[in-house]
Length: 130
Image 1 (tube, one colour):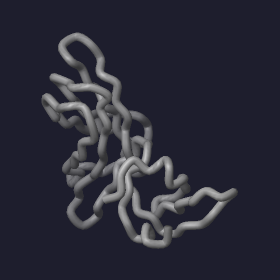
Image 2: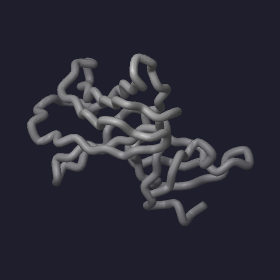
Image 3: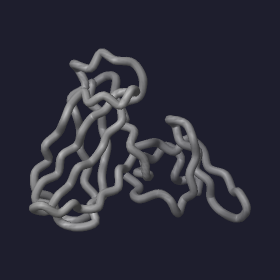
Image 4: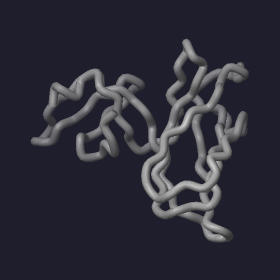
């Protein structure tokens, strides 16, 4: 459990991780099936689209992405929405947050992870350890 402290993890959620030095915003997604077109809409705190990423065709599974946020001057957290299709058919997708484990604890016999950007999650809810 304590070996996870300091490690980056992917958990369900649609908030982008912004690196203030590189001005890159990072996120990930999990596709339920192959998609011929995957688009990520970057949204500000008021749900207004401030950018898009065309990821093209992707196979089923987890995929990381980054968005150049150097031109973004807004306040508040950036979020994202995934639009994936295979031809005319929508493909199910799950938005994933990139976060860092800051502490671990045991709660009712389950390992609880405190996350650096706020909030907590169970170890079983972690989609990937990076």
